[in-house]
Structure formats: C-alpha cells, structure tokens
Amino acid sequence: VHLEESGGGLGQPGGSLRVSCVASGFTFSSYEMNWVRQAPGKGLDWVAAINRGGSSKFYADSVKGRFTVSRDNAKNSFYLQMNSLRADDTAIYFCARAGYTYGQGFDYWGQGILVTVSS
Amino acid sequence: NFMLRQPHSVSESQGKTVTISCTRSGGSIADDYVQWYQQRPGRSPTTLIYEDSRRPSGVPDRFSGSIDSSSNSASLTISGLKAEDEADYFCQSYDNKYWVFGGGTRLTVL
Image (cartoon, rainbow over all chains, first blue to last red; front, side, top):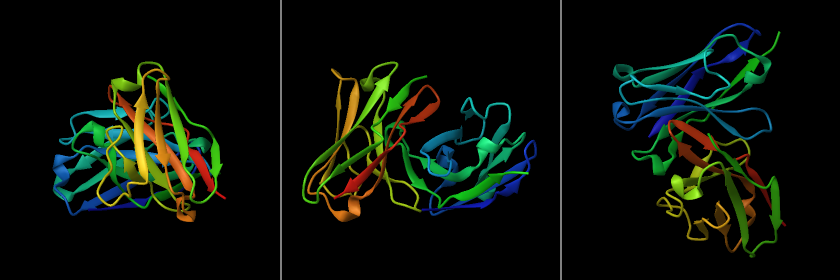
C-alpha cells in the first residue's frame, strides 16, 4: 500500500490550492479516504472524508463550505480543493486510508505535503 | 461532537512503564472504538492500537490499549520503554461521520 500526495505549495489568503493523493497497492474503490492536516508544531486535525463511491463527503467545521473533497476511482486518486484560504490553513496535509471497519481508524498514511498560506 | 483530551507531555526513564490517557468529553468512551497512533519527528503517523486494544501485526506487545468507562477514558501503556519510543502519541475516535483526534502527547524517554 502506498499513498503519495502532490500539489500544495504556497497559496494567497483568499486564494485556492488543490492537493492530490495517488494510491497504489490496494483496491482503491473499496476504501473510504481522508485528509488530515497538521499545523507546524501542532497536533493532527481531521479535515475531510469521502466514501468509497464518492457519493458521501464529510468535512470538519473549520473547512466546511471552503474545501471540497473528491475522488476518481479510475485513476486511484482523490483530491482536496481548498478555496478561500486562510493563514490558519497552513499545515502539512496527509492523505489517509480508513480501515475496512471504523474501528480500524486510519491504517495507511501518505508522507504529507506542505501547504503554506501567506501573502 | 465530542472532544478527546490528552496530557500535553509525559516523561519516564528507559525500561520503565508509562501510561498516556485520552479522556472523552461528550458521550461515552465505549460508544466508539479508540485508536492510538505514534508519530516520530518528521514522519507520518503509524497505528499502534485499533479497536481499543488490538495491535496491528508488527507492533510489539510492549504497547497495549484499554478503555475505562468509570473515568470515560482510554489509555495507552508502553512497557519496557526504549529510547526509540520518544515520539508524539495521538488517540482517535469516530462519531457519526466525524473523526476526532486527541491533542497529542509528547513522550520523553529519560
């Protein structure tokens, strides 16, 4: 199992960025996928989840209405579109696979990618 | 929603045993399974415990998890502390489409 994030980088306050995650080594369409972020020197903060087929999406209150999660099972990929960026969105963004049951939590994580929001 | 509260830091000597708590505010700790993750500096988190007390293959039995309904908390116990256990530890649970993490505990091995 391998998850690899891409995209991110520097974004302006009020601007947009997109991060992507490509998965390999498992049947991607069989798993819920999640984004988790970690601000510099801080803890883990769950951001968003998308179900296996992409029909259900869930968001933390802090990003609801600004961020959109999506997936393309044909490309083994999922995405986080971040709009109306704020300075407190600055963080490392990890993609994570939820285990087959909720009790398993997040069983695989990507290496993370840095998103910096600054003018 | 609920919150999970962890001590900011703990420290203990090599070879000893340390316990990290994760207290749930809002609902019962037994309502949803608890997971524990280890994160070493500059690395991604890895699972130590899932379903309150189960260890993934490859995780040493020095790591154990439990829940206590009387204190509404989960605990991660690490026995026979090693220098390599120095890391951040996070608890996690799930509630009705929201995943919740504790604030994390920095373990220092003396």
